[in-house]
Image (cartoon, rainbow, N blue to C red; front, side, top):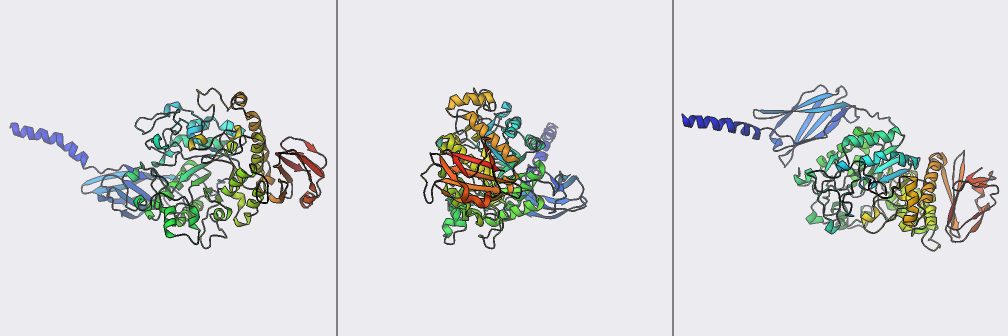
Length: 627
C-alpha cells in the first residue's frame, strides 16, 4: 500500500512535467502578422520552435490557402507558403500544428491593408533629408538607457559605447528639424542590435548595422509603437521618414544565426574571409573570380555574418520583412546599406517586389563607388549595365561628394578646384535620372564637412550653397547646421548633439545655446545655423531648384557659374573659389540671361540693378533670382 501510494504520488508529480516537455513549442512566427489586399497574394511564414518540423500543418480559413510546407535540415524550422486570396477577409487565421496526439493552434492575424497603392509615398528632389543617428541625437527617455538582460548598457564616457539617444528624443525635436527646413528624416537603423560590446578593438554597435532581430526596434531606442508614433508625427507635419535597412549582413547574435536553418544561410568565412570592399569587381570585365567572391561573399567584419541571398528562403525572409515594415509603419522610403555587396539579382528582385506593392515609394541604394560610371551602373534601366536592371530609383552620389570635399581645398587647375564639380556633373548623361541622386557633403561614415574644409566658414558655406542649388536630393547630417566637427575614427564623426541630454551644459537646439557655442567652439555657429535654415526654407519653395534644367559653364579663374531654369523662373549661381574678389563679365552667359535686367541675391537679400558685370567677393557663393 505504501508502494502504491508512492507510485501514485510520483505519477501526479511527474505527469505535468512530462506533458509540458511534450508540448509543441513555437517560439517565433515571422512575419508576425500580414494583410489582405496586396497585389502579390503570397507570403512565406517562418515558424521556429524546438523540433517543429515533426508537426503536420493545416490551415482552414476562407480565402487563405496553404500552398506548401517546407522542411529544412534544421528540425527547428518550418517555412509555410500561404496564398491570401482576393476574397480573404481580415481576421484570425488558425494555423494548426499536429504531432501524434498533440495539437497546437497558432492564431495568425490578417489585417486589412491600410496603405493604398496610390498613396504618395517616396522622396525626391523637392526634399531636404536630415540624417539622424538615433543613439547620438537626443535622449528623450532615460528610462530605456539600460535594459536588464541586454548585452550592452549606456556609457557616455565610452566613445564606442551606447550614449542613450532614442526615438523619443527625435520625436521631441521634430519641431527643431522642421523649423530648420528639413522635409524628410533618415534614421540610421533602429532594429535590435543586442550585441556584446568589445571596445578594446573599437567595436561598437550603437550604429545599428548588426541586427539581431529585424522585426523589433531596439528597446534602448524605444518600441515598434514608438517608431510608428515617430512616422505618424512626422507625416502629420508634412514630413517624411526614411528607414535604413541592411540585407548584406546581420550581427553574430541574430537569433537565426545562433541556430541557422540551413548550412548555406551565410557565406563561409573560413573560405572567403572578410570582404575586400572593392565593389568595382562587380562590373569589372577583367575581375578575377577570387576578387569578385571576396567582394560578394566575404564578411563585412567578423561580427557581421554575410548573408547568402541565393538561398530562396532567406531571400523571401528579407523581402517580406521589408514589405511588412512599410505597410506596418507607413514609412516613405528606404536607404539600403551596402547595396552592391549582396547578389545583384537578389537586390533587383527585392527592389522590384517592393515597388510593385508601393509604386510611389523610393529607395536609395548606398553605392559607395569611386566614379560616375560605377555609380550610374546601379540606377534603374542603366545604359551601362547591359541586360541587368537594378530597378533602383536613387543612388548615393559619392563622386559628387568627393568633388565637394576637394574643390575648395586645392589650388585651381585644369582638373582641380571647382573644375572638379564641373567634370563630375558633365558625366550626368550616364545616369538614368541624376535628379534622383542623393547628394551630401558628409554622413555618419564620413569626416564631417566642417573638418574637411578646415573649419573655414567661407568654404563651408560655398559647399552648402552648391549642394542646395545643384541637381539631386540634398542630405544634411545632424549637426552640420551648427558646423559640428569630427574625423578619423567613427565615434568622432558621430558625436552627441549638444543639448540632446538633460545634463549637457549647452543646448544647441535653442538660440541661446547656439550663441554659447560661438564662444565655446570658436566658430560662427549662429551664423552658420541661420545660413542653413534660411537657405533650406528658400529651397523648399523653389520648384526651379527641384526640377528645373541645369546649365553650367566651364569654370574660369576658379569661378563656377551655372543656372537652374524652367519656363517660369531662372536662378543664377556664381561660386568664387579664389581668395580675392573677382569681377565676372556676364556676356559669356547670354544664352541663359537674355531678357533679364536685374536680380536679387538670395543669401544677402541684396538687390542687383545691373547684371552686366558682377563683383563676387573671394570665397563666396552668390545665388541670384533673375528678374
